[in-house]
Length: 149
Image 1 (tube, rainbow, N blue to C red):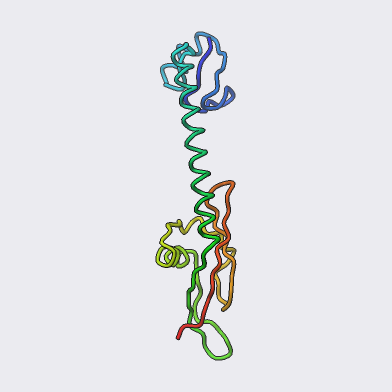
Image 2: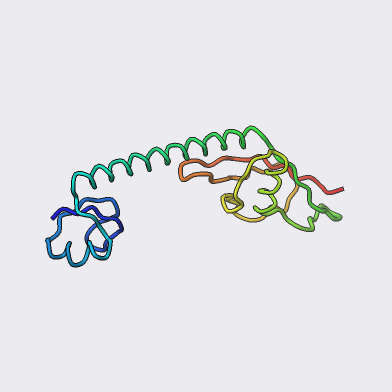
C-alpha cells in the first residue's frame, strides 16, 4: 500500500514523502496513529497543493528578508556608552540594545536573536554588525558607537 507520511517516521521516511508499506503495517500502525494517509488521488493532489503553498511562502519570506537586508545595509544607527579616563568604557552594547536602536532610529523590526554578535561591543568607533534575517540572507548593519556626554 502506498502511504503519504504526515510526520517523520523513523526508518521509513520524512514528512510529505510517499512510501510503500505492507497493508497490515499501514492499517494497524500508520493510519490509526495519524502518521500517514493512504495515497489516493485526492490525497496526492492535496499534498501537491500543500507543497506548492509552502514553496510560495518560503519564496515570499526570502524576498522579504532580502528587502529588509537592503534597508538595513543602506542605513546606520548610533549608540553611546560611558567612557572614563584613558578611553576605558563603562558598559557595553548588546544585541538587545541594537535591536531597540534599529526600531527607534530606522523604524524597522529586527529580532534580537538574529543579531550575530561574537561578543558585546565595548569600543568606540564604527562597527559592522551581522544580522541573520534568513538562512540565505545576512545583512551587515553599520553601528557607530560614540562617547556618552
